[in-house]
Image (tube, rainbow, N blue to C red; front, side, top):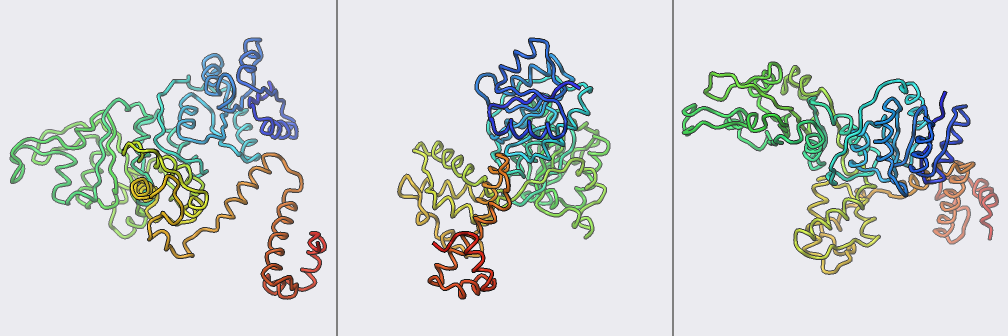
Length: 462
């Protein structure tokens, strides 16, 4: 078997992958830059598969991907990056990457991908294409990486997609991204909120009407299906669609034709349908409120968009983006949040999700007195949020530290972190009780002998 090539300027990441492949008896070769890999390719060497970072000094991983997919299209390429965003994921997957691996990565997950890449190494992959990308969706959380990966996988597809997620989580942004990175990108994207239009008008809004079809129909009107011809029709809040229109929509999806209201000539619908809902459609089907056959027609590919509270690590990134956006709209200098304010915001529930955070940033741009926003500058309703709604963000900090230490292959990691945890906990309990060990033990729910032993083991006597 030819070697697996590892291309990464990050020494620690290379070391982790090298140790993993050595343990599994998989041959490998390491390169600190894409330029080194280019030189090896020119010298006649060829990998079995490749795992490459995206951002490196000199040529980028995407340039290397494009080159390898042009010259050796059968070679699977796994791309990885610490800069986890939609642009990287889509560019990599559209460029023919075998898979996209955000850093910090799980070693077992990386090994599984490499094994899959080896198994697939004889298959023909697509040729890379260049894409013009702008930041449309932001997120570094693992849940968002799954969304980015799905958009990338669907970039050459016309499949019907159902997007689920809470209100304000950004479902329309995902729909627009699916359209923008699809073969229909040059055709119209038409969006309609089916819950916002009166039931009596929705049919005409979707399918259009002929002149004289009903009182007030003085002219023929093209509906949203015709307006989106060749492109994408996004039906938001599909769960609220009236039952009779569900039947008409099912007919369009089944045979690809529809009739204007009052019309007799069938019109072909060359439209990709993307739908979204914040509701549980399976439950609505069981309740008889949504047609089961329509649900299965819409649920070809499902993308679940996480709530903001499920991706708290993205809040600082989103805050900076929205503050900059608001400042540009108002022609002012972008404001910034203090560490304390940012930490406070990262602990809130944000029931309105990303939309609520964006509105907050616009409010701060207009209303906050100084350039640096403190906790006291936040709206009163957020400052008065119940303590139960404030997340214990020490878990996020612990998770980040664990990721860092795992990437560095720290020995005895469990024992090391456990000692730090116990040390901090016992010291704070002793401070709380004025150094009285028995009371500290009672406060912690452990025995007197246990706290004495821990104090000795952790060298806390001093």
